[in-house]
Image (tube, rainbow, N blue to C red):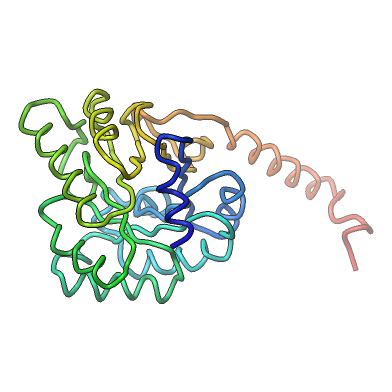
Length: 257
């Protein structure tokens, strides 16, 4: 709970940094810089080439989270509950407890507002820390992804859902692809932090898929900025290895028994 309180206390004081990780090696590097490490169900598209996050299983999330846990020492570790694992109150509690028990994560994340409020209530009642997620909900999308907050109905729903989630105990809310003025209004009206992804600088923090910002994952999504072309350096290392093997330079005596 100390880590969660630390995140909440950053509201209006300092920006919160959140990145994804799906393995120990990436997690231990990400952990040096971020406040929150998210084991996102985005691993479905990034690692398995799934067409939708709806295909990600509970077993896959747990196995990757176990690996991530080995690399996370200081950050808050949050795990996405995959599609169809919290469709009822009982399934939500059962699966959330399973995730926490088997991965030793700090919290779980669920997509939705009023439609899943009873699931959130039972988790909070049973002391399962919950991060919310509003706006574009990948688990609910069928077809093309579209930004949210473009009409009065969407705006009212987003604001009401955010207030409802806070009222019922979530400690932070991811705002995905929400129009900037609405994301700003939501962030200003809440006492808990908002973590934006494609929802402007007005959120209390930002999250990205680590593979995207490192240039490992080819994507044309509007909110993704490639901060490094890691593929370039990977190819350099692979070329050097291949060259030395073919030229019989590797392994030299130094690397042989």
